[in-house]
Length: 335
Image 1 (cartoon, one colour):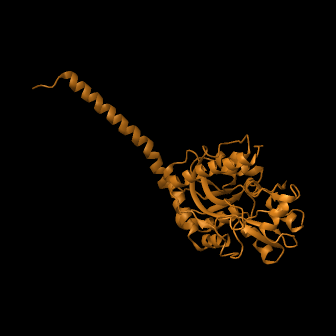
Image 2 (cartoon, rainbow, N blue to C red):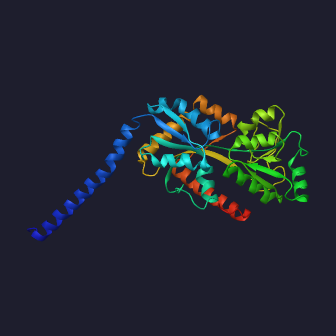
Image 3 (cartoon, rainbow, N blue to C red):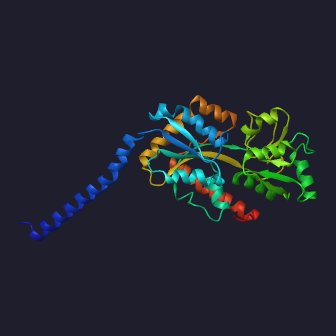
């Protein structure tokens, strides 16, 4: 039985289409494969949108010290503070999408800025690829050592009876939300005092100019040890046993449902080959397991975030929804 000429023609056309599709798939996959094989071809730059000694700067440097061991190229930290972290974030987007320029930051510019600013020069969710989550931790609620308040209950009692008389300082969108959530759940209305950076906010509390501060633990630990500041509570769901085991959580102190955590991570520019993203992620997490990384985690009572890339992306979306609700219920108007 002979095959119909038309059938032969159709079969040939199908084979051509299949071959063309195979070639097209190879053309898409090959550049990504080659990118992973040649990456990194030069030092990797960690852009930190905050100044030196900030938490994001410290974790970036702790990872950078051993990156060459895991990548074959050194990592350098480039601090680009200012503009509510827009300057540093935009610098990553201005660079090629090849993995050699990475954003190392807290959740502040990615999550909180998106909620607190009407207009941004970029979309922090769509324009960045979540590479890796490093760790999460709590901030501390501090007052001056000469303050009349020795615990959260005393502060809340006074604040409810004297609305607007207590002052709280903040220097970032993260600490602004921490303070807003405290007011919302405690029923205490405070006068908010914004600062451009953490250092002047801390100096204001050391100078007894403001009552309350929500600082990262590593930046106030020396002042707590010296007796200049008093910790009233921590904002996470667990105590900081390695730093201040006797300091309660805000939930233990009576502010039910209060939980505020900061976290650090890495983001690459959208369009970066996923093979490169995976290579970066693996190198960073291995570097975090090195002594310098472990030292940072211990100093900040920071819990490692062992997530896959998809899990980190999902977690980021959940954080956006969670804090979006806080912003709406607190009546915070985007600037």
